[in-house]
Length: 345
Image (cartoon, rainbow, N blue to C red; front, side):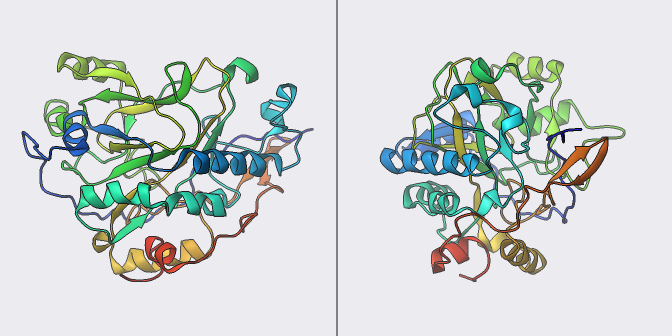
């Protein structure tokens, strides 16, 4: 029987210790994009990466995907089938195969125009970056409907009431109104504390496991609560090279879109290096050396996704396509090693 290439869930976790900055001022007045970020819970930084380099990064991502030799050819849409791809999560998030440590991914993370907005937001250029994954999602218009439903959520635990993490997408493809991309409940992040005061988490919470310490799903009724507070659902539009930043308390999810654009991006989150404990520093260094993929959080909650598995005759076995090293190895510069947590600032 042919193997079934379905993504496996994360496997291990570490304590989710973190720090939060002071509560956001009621009326921010920075006079720049930070005002939009604090008010809306997200912002698009235009041209963080020169468009030609963003396009080159997308080309490298597609070359990486073709390199599995499963039949996918970017130039032949008849090959755009799930059976011609390695396993992914939610249709296009590659959690294994050392994808997080390919050279093009690290080159994108080290782009000055990507780092600078996070440095400006946090007030320090001594930052750590997540070993987050990449997303290469083929369009539903070609592949067919994905077996995945919208999953409104936030990536911050309810008890962490203030701003503690800001996620990022380095956009490598066009993300217009009809293209696959990020959806947010605009202005939901500033309401995070109020929501959980009025809707306390009670009883068993099966989604709060060691694997999902900083995750909270929202029901349709929850979304109606946010809408009653004036929030609106927004498709975040961006161009190749733009950086999307959003507060981890913002209600968000992704949609597949209806165009024929191959959604391509690098997830990259940065937080102050001073927030990481010594225990997590040692762990992060080891995960880097092992070329492991982790969560959106750079300084804590460092669970890994483990090895890739496939089902053969109903049994899960190691995926023979998995690898422990990237195809194109990164260049270990001082800047990169500090972002990785290997070298101290």
